[in-house]
Image (cartoon, rainbow, N blue to C red; front, side, top):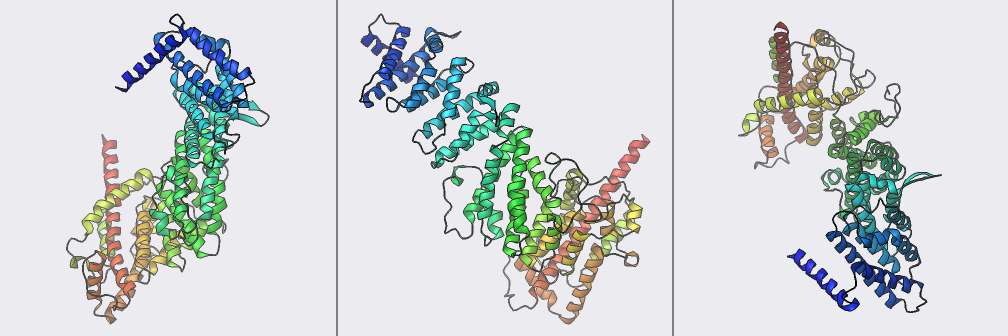
Length: 639
């Protein structure tokens, strides 16, 4: 219906022009007459600019209609009207007079005509030298005054160019120049001038067009944009990261809903926002924008963005906060890093964040190859390991969450055979860690038993085997990574590094720590236990205390179990308290527990019971997986 109406209006315009100009006037004559009227106005000394301006606008609009009508009739090649445009360099003349803005409004009329020409004419115009030279000059004039009322029209013009280049990438060649300051992509440079506009809708459209430019699969464009554009987007992240107040709770960081969009560009960040929600949302919106650039852009631009984020955000802001003495800064930095690692999907950008946490050197793509880095007192990894055993529970909790989020590097292959008898003995040893009479799982109907843990353990072990866990396996940082056979690893205790030492220290205080800290701690330890590595198997499976010279998982839990047994002998009501606490933790109605002493101990006992079952399931899943692999390999070799 709309197309019929458009065709009717165009036909009416044709009839009207024939009445005014006469029935014998051709389309080409009419086109030239309109152009002559424009040049007459330009060259005249008419003082009343308003009326000539309207006449120019009408003539340009009619000339566009004639070009479109000509294109519809002549499907192959160009018609006489378009030939007239190219021959007489109409666009070049219009661009020149548009800069003088005479008559008043001429710049806007020319800009609009250029835009409509790009959008309304199907055949390729930009390859013609008289077209792209005029367009190039117009691009150079865009954004020179971001507060100008014509900036919105400039943005529409640049967007039309971006869409043309998106459909045919080679057109970008007409807007790439090289001078003393290097290579420039003129469209991106103009957009970078417009993004500082006070009109948020215009600035948003400029960033969207920059995203389109970044996605062009054209190496020259990527190289030209790699000099300034990454610094701009990283500076946005830096700005909002610096303004998140230290009073911002981690829950705000973890739950804030954010993504690239207009809502984060409209200045909705109020000074009364004491918890920093506005800046948190803006930070993660810009992080999403950076990730889109990295995902869609060529490697040279993606690496430049990642390098800028590493320098301006991770090193300049988050690392600085992490090493400050104020606990609020530490909690905020670890919470932001954790949320970033959890939410980033881009492989390259994720490597930047995770490698920053573990060695600060950056991925190989961002730095030259060199000797492996070992933690020093000034590295982020060493700082985080020390924070895992921090006396402040909130610092400890956020650090454990961050440490548990770094899981992308595959572990070394494991060559081992499982023994079922050893498996049964190991599981039985772990199950006896909960003192008799203190198991409370059966008191609540529908509670998760070991079967559910087995299902989850098989999934987690398989995940760790296929994806691996980003793990610092050198003797100076965590546990010994010397290549051991399975028998050797079980005879010799794994070397306890600073990371495991911090985790085992926290595990020793299982009965004295808040419930939330214990949940994160045991979840992290379960992830570590799921890794297939001989040294970790030794640390997890060795339960014979007569052969142990170092702490391991079992020895620490055994000590916790002994402390719990001692307390239970002096407090006969503990089993009742355990049943009530379990009912409360699953959301069932209970009696008032506020009068129960040592509530942390009661909840810690429940965590111990569940953690022991989880470890037994992991041990079973790992050993049965190994036995299956070994059996399959032997069968394949035999055949």
